[in-house]
Image 1: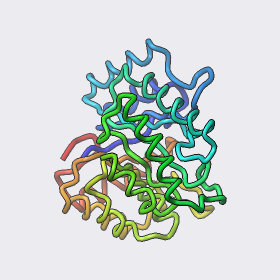
Image 2: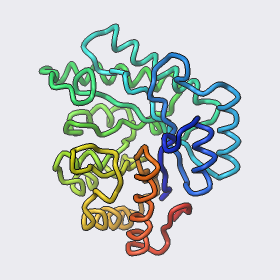
Image 3: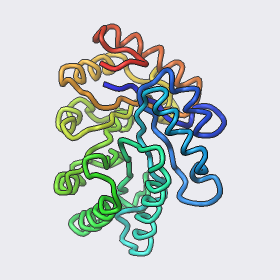
Image 4: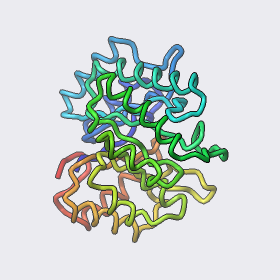
Length: 268
């Protein structure tokens, strides 16, 4: 198992974050949240330096593509624009050779949108068409990870299976939404390349410290990953230095209890 975190921890560039985080982690989630505009992607020189850091620190990279991409939108123009933005991000990231690519497939036109499609078959067809276009753009299907968001992942599972895609399983979202994360993990882990982990604070804000994740469930989660001999990425998907520091402390304690062979900054 490879322990990771995101490239949005410290103020500064992607490269600044990777240089600070690289010695202590196995995988870094390179966040290309913006679709376009100045600063959406690193300049070429920085992307080449990211490749150098990857080799220096023996890192893997997981690219997170733009959040605005609405790959299953009923609006064909918006859907095509979403595919194009994902492909631009993948093209920019090719310089530093990410092992995984994460995409969102919204159940509406965006996350937390209340208007959902009534024709699930048509929604799946649109999602499949967009995801197939991304694969044709040069991403091996097994490396393209559809993220678990705010709806029942069983709705998109047939598309993931048909295209041979993988999963970014956000257990933080499951706990946030009051669901049984271990039952979902048991079903989806064979296709999962990334497990995204974070807590939800008392105000309901997710992507916070693991101090907000129920401790018995944390131990159970790590035990399940250990028992399954999971060899993918477990990423601390937080975006603030304080949240990362406290999450690392909690994780180090739980890892020591779960399996002495696992440690932050080392592989199992």
